[in-house]
Length: 301
Picture 1 (cartoon, helix red, strand yellow):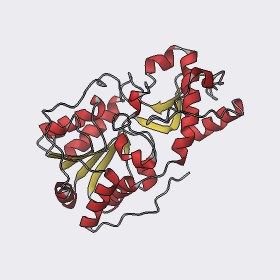
Picture 2 (cartoon, helix red, strand yellow; picture 1 turned 120 degrees about the horizontal axis):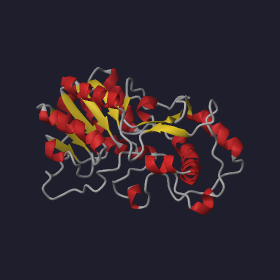
Picture 3 (cartoon, one colour; picture 1 turned 120 degrees about the vertical axis):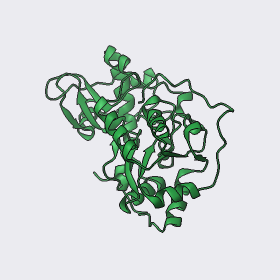
Picture 4 (spheres, helix red, strand yellow; picture 1 turned 135 degrees about the vertical axis):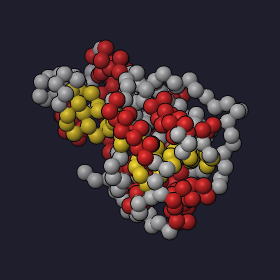
């Protein structure tokens, strides 16, 4: 569930090559004031797939757009059937070494903040505080008519009751929590309305074709202004919603560091891109800094 306009970006041969040298990341964290910007790549080791990495789900999956969701009851039926099934996988996901390392850096005062493009809540489950969820969270549901907000677990309970026995086998799960189901598998899945006013319920996330709330964007821009270094973790930066903060940091003369296996849209603005798996890379960084990483971090609730 991201903004849709820039999905066509692809890497070119003009981008600087990646490195395996972690020292720039170690030095930046040692100095402090590092703002983390994370993407779907940090959650792949938790069993949640990326969109664009190797085997990324965009090759088989077209995310729901805001226009489609609000435009018809059949699209909402298809979305909620698939999302209801995918939610079970998200609910079982646990923070991985990358999430735990970020939380450890925060506890030791090395970070100025964390912005995530993910909707899975795994940074918070690992113990990170004050995380800005750029694209919202699948943990919450909002009504498009009255604005009432409610926990996703409550909606899951209501959907279970309305669709007893619904348990198709999905071909895959996507970073937005959407399971791959055929129309036949969706069948006559029943969508439930807002319990307050009977209106249309929507997950509290930014769909493709929808914009990030302006106040949230400005909050992130303020975090970039206050940071000494911007550290991008596991994001291709394909969509403008995250890429704009890389451009802002670079234009302000701040150091941009990227840890991502594949080339990214932000490489030309970065001092370096470390092409290593995130869990192992961040664990190694923590070791060099003498920062203990909590191996027992668990999702709460």
